[in-house]
Length: 398
Image (cartoon, rainbow, N blue to C red; front, side):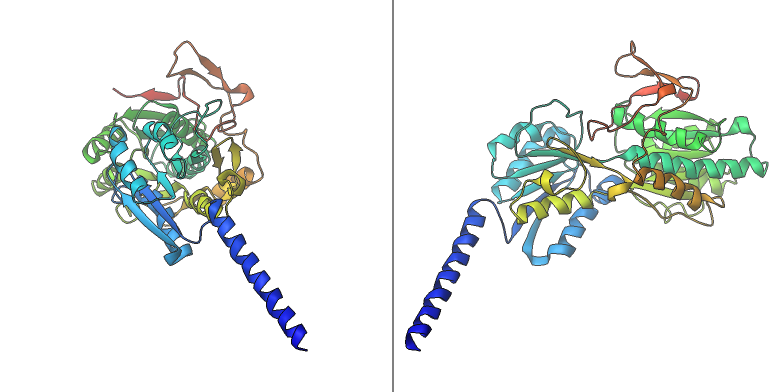
């Protein structure tokens, strides 16, 4: 009896030692019970883009509680990235997320091999050699843009049916930051969504040459409204365009707004139809899960994986539509949006950039495209690559 008791004690001691050894081995190889996580924002949470990105931080706090320490730096310009990045690294961050587009992140990552750097996709990463600890990611924005275009088209159709406008007055306006592929891909998908409902619709675009300037964005939207646009959307970072639409409505001018990143119903209750957003939470949560469980990020993230680059759309919850305003939206809008979203969830991606359209590349005017056979966005990269302005249906304003 005494011998059996001793054997039991020894067995328990061995098991405890094995568990301790396993725990130490897990920690030595990168597993964590606690993580210090950094976020570097290009603006602050008063702007829709950064507010939307910060929801991922909130999701981390909710899921992990005191298992994570979160440090943030706001209003960091791309060319001023180095100092805040090094500060967060020196404070012991295990992983840092960035919503800015600085190429300094990829350059500095090799200096900190023990830290994972995860940056919102800012360029075509296909074929690019990157450090093992550098990652890019983005929701497939064109899907949300197309669906928001359907909502805009439904409103235009209602306006035509009610006699508010004629078919040749079905003009959308778009406040765009820069003439790059990310912005052009988005506003083209938006227009093609509109034209899936109102085939006669055209679009006018005004560039602001900045991501974030309330007065410039608001002024651009006002000019588009003066040019006859009845629906406005944007790929910029402030509420300026939404306010311009709301003020137009107060002057008895019927103009509606389709949002990006953040619901505009509070600031533009009389004109806001719906908002499309990239959901950053799935990637950020999965990346932290990966570090907690000692796995490579791309082995845990549920998405299309291109090396250290990841993207997904409605099918993985990386893109969503929020805050459809039933008093403002046309009847049947939810059903029309749901039908398109269902196609995306089934893996059908080739119907967006397709039709009797030709266009010219803005990065290389010698390149043209014909969309008769279609174009699939985000096929090899999380960064949007469509940069062709469609002939005849899109006008770039002065």
